[in-house]
Length: 472
Ligand code: TRP
Image (cartoon, rainbow, N blue to C red; front, side, top):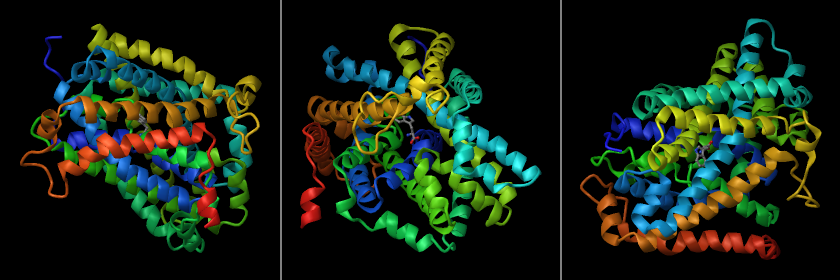
């Protein structure tokens, strides 16, 4: 362990890599589809509150723990809080493994839609081929699904294997800016569609009668998921951050970018869905496939240069997913590198192989394999029953593991880590003026843990907190 620790090559490098981790399928695929499933408005508002009150302070907490200890989660927890707390890091490693297991399935879909769009651009676009039914057939094709997952996992292993500065940073620097640009083009086009007004209303006009208690848990869980919080990914990335950078500024920027992209992506998709006749019904049949069912039509039938932008867009979805999967694999592997003294290459290869097994099972849970697709251990009897291995892992990891991990990380950062340490990390001459240490400390000690605990307890008790608001 005497090697010099890898570092980000530049200030932009960290911001791009951290936002690369944060911005991913969570923003482009998951947020739109859970916003749809939770009836928009109120869900989005709760989500934004969670981001500001819980997500942002915890982002700073994770990065500061990482930078001050220069260790990945297990070692970092042990260093700041003692061996009794290293299990929090351990839970993070496990969560990373689980998320990576199902995340690569959707990443594989993006890969296939990239290839599909290349084909459409070269020959002709056929609306039937991008319908909900066609999507269902594709998702149920086991061989194709397995091949896609395999391809995506290889790409992830390749980058992580190259290390922090040469692999992760270099990839993020080029790709993230292009993604931002394409999204802006799409947004400008989508806003001129007939359904744009309805879309904006659906997303931004809260109606609390529409919000289920599990929806509140989902909004909380998603705010962790989308910011890559609650499992130490930002601890790990923070551990490669230089001392001369402002933790506060970096956190603020990453959170802002992530939130903007999620809202922009959702606005684009809903504008399309509300504009194209019949699409609404198709989407409702397969919310999971929204990103893939809604957009091809927009590109090929409405957007100038769509035949060029469509393949580029899905390619960038792949890259957005890749910058996220590498952060997940980095957390899992860095545990073996830092704590078990494995060589980087063996750690990355073994973790990648282990995850691949889980990914293959998930890939078969969209119709290819009956048992994996249909078991409903957790959701039996609930109205919009989520079925299959994929949904179960997503539900467990994002709605439970991440909030629980985040809860303990904040507790440690607020109550165990000394004020001197956290203030020293957060406040110096580079700290932006909007930041007040006292408010942050209050959030981390009281607001965030109480909010997370309250939501978890309320859901455990089966409390229906949409009722009073609906009556009033
Ligand atoms: N934040 C990523 C997304 O929105 C997913 C992700 C990457 C993640 N690394 C993570 C989620 C670590 C939780 C923890 O797509």
